[in-house]
Length: 169
Figure: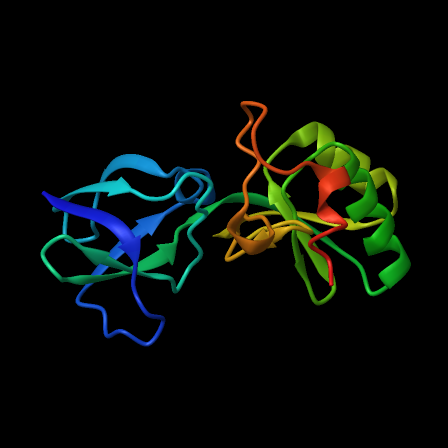
């Protein structure tokens, strides 16, 4: 089993591939398989979200490229940017991960959200495609990062929103 504990340089030449849907690329601890079916253990920093094209380095030195697997998604399309912004607002208000593209929004398959988006006037497609949602306003490399290496850990330690102003310069 290959054990992976860290990211590799973006330009490192990969010899292996790891194909995962977004839900699994959002886990920092995972037992899975490479594309060649070799067992793989991920032990990454908490909050790490892998993106298609990211490179990882195994404990044996091999470089593994992350591939965003195709998954069942809904795609809201419109040539009207205002309609797309309205739909993005309503999806974001429901804390739904959303991929923003030119003329479309992509989100995980959910018929209720699909009807909401259709009701806003957008064309809705059900399809299978790689899903790469936005990482959020404070995201870095797709994960949940904080300025200068500080972290709010959910246990009452680390900076809070009201502390962020002192880091913003």
